[in-house]
Length: 380
Image (tube, rainbow, N blue to C red; front, top):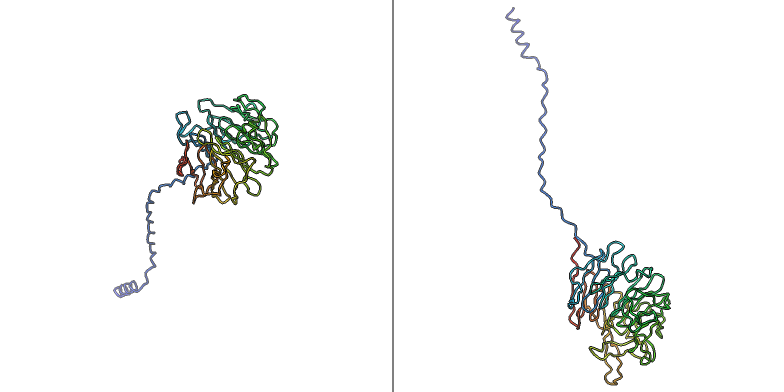
């Protein structure tokens, strides 16, 4: 029995269901972390500084950009003009927003309305310091400068042998003096030894030398000069005026787009000056002109769509009248879009969309081929 019991026990053990076994979960796979390749941060492209002003003299063309830097290009003629990056006139509210260049000074109108000048021979000044009124525009002739003021007046400084300072005297002034009788000026145009102001209503007043009709006055041979402003006859609808630092002619852009000029082109030391006419003469029409520039020999304009063009003088040799007429316009910078146009003594400067500057003519003299320059590398 015992054996049977044993057998039965044994048989009972082999037929019983074993308890369920918990399965150990498989270990989660270890994520493989790939080492990221080191990244090199690309420097954001630096914008080209925006050109805010260009001015030319005899030996150089100077450019100001929006961060306050000024640089002059060209030959200094051994007379002291900087051609390397020039000193900063100021930054922030003291940064230059307009330039004017005579034979002896480079002047800047700052954002705050002050004016600072650097003399070619080391004399720096702020000519409006004693005037006490902010400038809204500046311009320069051969050896003198003027500023249109926020109160409508005009103040001038420099040489005054022909009455070009407009204060009623012929005394040179190194600190600015107010022009007599102008209280509504909105713009300026200074030539070799004459000055003009654009007035609110569209009239133009000029003062200084008149032997070639620079003041637009009748009887040019009789009226040699005026020490105080006088109205230019026939100009009542001007919207802008311009001359050049060695020019003896002045031009007005009029409402509707007509261009009228008076005086003469050329200079005694180079060629016999050719008078424009007895009174302001209207140039052949050119559609869409919005800006003018004048140098010793040329009158040029910029249109609203960015074209630059020039009226070239043609001698009236057949009649030998000593006067000139201007032919229809010809392109100045073919294929380029110009955003602003200025002049020096012997060249024209056009700022392009890419902030380069094209120069037609030479910075010292002559009528050379067009050059394209980039006066500033991108700011660091």
